[in-house]
Image 1 (spheres, helix red, strand yellow):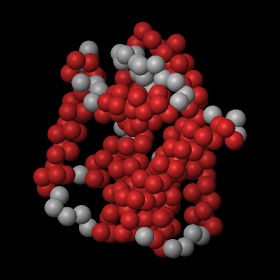
Image 2 (cartoon, rainbow, N blue to C red):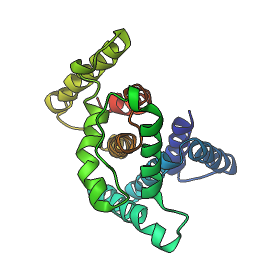
Image 3 (spheres, rainbow, N blue to C red):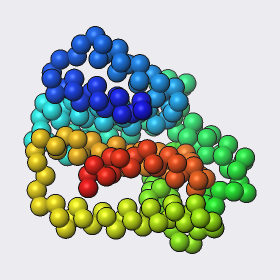
Length: 218
């Protein structure tokens, strides 16, 4: 709900080019709630909102805007700890992963590579993080009817992805800001899940948050 209302107020505020006090207060309130619940995921939507604002001002450079913004955010993610020791985001991710391994080792169902708070370690683990959140659960993970439903959902989502390339000849320009928003927000959210959540059941639950963005693309 917080994500939906953050996007709602940001989108219409930018579209109307006017932020009333009620809209600003609602936007700040839901950003606070989302950050309070999921601190590590909050940077994803904040980055996308910045991109959405810049996109509306310069729509001809959409790819450059999103890629450069995420590169800057990635550099800040790894470098802020050297300026402000309390903002050690890489170590926070490693600590959360270690905690889950300690308490849920027997029910994870995923063999995890070792994650260290360095750029190299995160880059090496990126393929595993994405495959865990996009390809799992696959048929080999099916153990009961609920995991079968989740595996079927994964297969159906991938099959429907080809509709974009087969049927979408041209996307309307007025929807491009939201389309790019959905792509980058979904990608970064899935990556965050892959780095911090190691239990298949939890991955399926978290992943359901970005399914509306995926179906909007279709």
